[in-house]
Image (cartoon, rainbow, N blue to C red; front, side, top):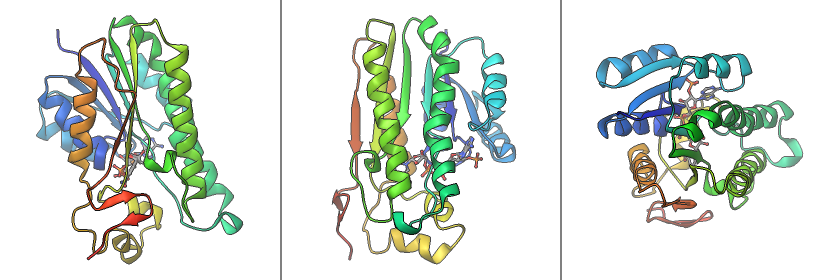
Amino acid sequence: MRKTAVVTGASSGIGEATARRLAAEGFNVVAAARRRERLDKLADEVQGIRPVTLDVTSQESVDALVASLERCDVLVNDAGGALGLEPVASALLEDWQRMYDTNVLGSLRMTQALLPLLIGSGDGVLLMLTSTAGLTSYEGGGGYCAAKHAQTSMTETLRLELVGQPVRVVEIAPGMVRTEEFALTRFRGDATAAARVYEGVPDPLSADDVADAIVWSVTRPAHVNIDRLVIRPRAQAAQHKVHRV
Ligand code: NDP
């Protein structure tokens, strides 16, 4: 019996790479995000992928996705991202609200809605794509770090609350990953500012590097729980310690 994996944020970056890799591993993949045309293209290209329009900030949208599922073995909560790099003193409230709504409450909505199916599968895996920003703070990262810290905390809490149930709770916390859109979204479409993030860094992680770690984590034997996997490029020894040439 083919297992079903739901991947949010599957229209780009890490989510898309994860959907591709899970399909290659033989999963039926439900690829979910807001931009349907990108999901349709992905599904045309890769066998085993079903595109579903999803906005994780809408309970209605989450419920509609869940109602369309017969089973769910793996949930990858990837949808999210950062907005702005302003200091706390001048950050925009609406940016903080959006980051919290997407990264934290979006993951909560998906988790609440899918837990019954995950547990019912007999060996469910709930995976949270957090960030090293969920472990350490940095200047300008206030709202994003706060949201990712919240997501990390939710993950730890879930693992405690669900012990004894047939579901694993996995956290993947990447450092610097060069994806097409992450920094562009953060800097509101300013390509120069976005490029500066990765300037001189010999080899940031790629979306596929993280997808590889995700797929490895969710395909371990049922009794093996990868609590948290921190993954950074070799050039990044710590949040602030980045080698640039
Ligand atoms: P992308 O910007 O490429 O991907 C973000 C994805 O989230 C998109 O597919 C987007 O699709 C989706 N998304 C955003 N808002 C919503 C929403 N309301 N409902 C449904 N889907 C939504 O970034 P990455 O692939 O780089 O990042 C993916 C995850 O990894 C994020 O959670 C990010 O915080 C985390 N991360 C990224 C790192 C990096 O350096 N790139 C490092 C560590 C963690 P659409 O717009 O079509 O809805």
